[in-house]
Image 1: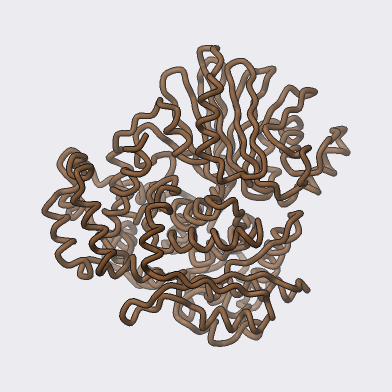
Image 2 (image 1 turned 180 degrees about the vertical axis):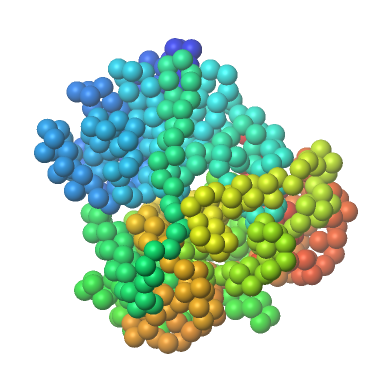
Length: 593
């Protein structure tokens, strides 16, 4: 787990090393254990390392294989690298390190661009082929690891976050109208390749990008999961047994492949609690668990300690409870936003940031429960969509998911950003993709392969890596995803959703944890904006920077400020926070460049 960056000059000139150094400075927190750079003609690569596998200097990066004429910078973890290493050795490849980075290099030497199909894990990497003068970039199947890039004239830059790219001075920082529409309609999700800025793109999950010496770009999609049900129906028990076995394997792989201790972020919900239970069931002892809680706001609870305490007690974990006062949250809020590669409105983003700070003092690696709700229908809006009968499929989805309809969007932003209903068009394209049996199959596949990538998955990566903490997400093991997508939605949504996980957990976890309402890492102060939090949002939206940007319609802003607790999205997010967060992110990350 690390950060990566690089520059390719398509006119043959050598990049300035100062540019790489500036990018490395903005990635330093992702890899505090070592920092290195490499240059060869028109390319320069940079890498800050978080040492997880093979802690020796032999696995430092950029890693160069002079015998093959290859250099790599890699962020992530390859869980099947021991098996791949053995296979490659049998093919005649020799290794000088014990980590997974070199395994990718040898895999590329053996299979070229098809190497990604052999990799099982989370990854974003770039390989420079010195002989052919080509740059090859790849991102993992579920987009767990980020990969941003920009191309301006004859200069191509890439990095693990947008902040690094912005230091190059080559970026068009004007707002992308399509990205803005997604930002304010899909609660901060802007599907690849777009971002909120015109000059920055991101590589889509399960995609590779090859750049030839003449500047030609070639993208390839190497994985497209199907959501088709087995021709011979499975019994309920068969499905649950298969899911449990696959999940156990996913959890086990993410525990074994590390040369450092691995903890669990324990929210008190079913997903993270089940990870603890499966680790204990596999014989793991002395499990490290971490929970965070905040102040209550009215009837809205600020912690889930009553549930996480039960799980910690059941499995006798080494449990760490962290309680954060609201004034501390407000003090640290700008700091968290400054570490977001893109503006993220999920209220638990700040919670993860503050939790990761404490956890990183104890361990370098944690397992987390992201992905379970999308795979197994755990959110309240899924049953509503399934029961909806009015309109076409986009209508059925939008009515229970979009933060604002297009008409309200046009009231939210100034006329310079008016245009088509871009979000509706994008969702229509995604739902129309072949290979899914029903409307809900299409929704759940879209969620886990596209929407989740730029909401909880990106959020967890950004907020944990801000403290040099690697988060592993077993529920997004691609083999588990392939299996779960074949399960009939009716079984997933049975008894309020996530039925297979509840059945697996019965007898392992306390019933109170299994039967409780869906929870999160809660932060009520960013949902019910009152007192100092409301004043903070008011100052942001009344600032000269915001007024001069002319992004939001003043009348709409004043309406939200007048009654912030009357304006929530369909999935219960604060519309005022959405606007304030975007403006604050622009001020901290774009205006300051």
